[in-house]
Image 1 (cartoon, rainbow, N blue to C red):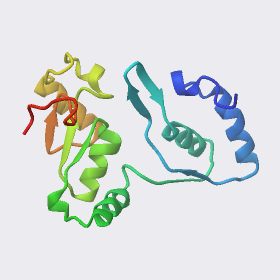
Image 2: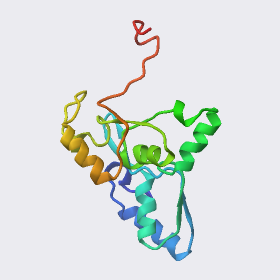
Image 3: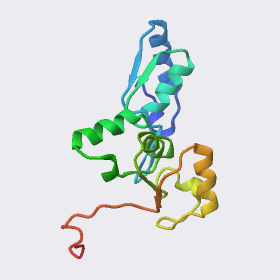
Image 4: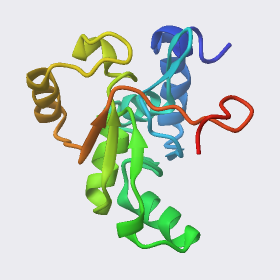
Length: 163
């Protein structure tokens, strides 16, 4: 398996072997999803952004698309036929979601119960300490316009008391 255990633990040992061969052939890389991690109900999975970053560190050429590039946000807004004033981006990644929304000039809602939850030290559903939030925003270089501890969409089958 060319990925080894990368998805589960972020270990790039097996991936590096493939990247070295790509580098020897001077192949360019295209990364359409530059996220570093994604959270599942049973833990984190490591994402292609780590592979793209490694390839660039090795000297490889890589073009990335998607978050946090403002073009990604602008294309979505354009396709939906909306104005930036009518949109808010919701996400749990300061590096991708919030930084991208900031670059695109749209409001954002940072979900603290996502990939940064452990760093923030708050129980699920509770708002983290404001000082911890501000320290994280400063360290990551991205500040949202709004903050929520969790986010969940309900449909009529799940809850019939929402009007």
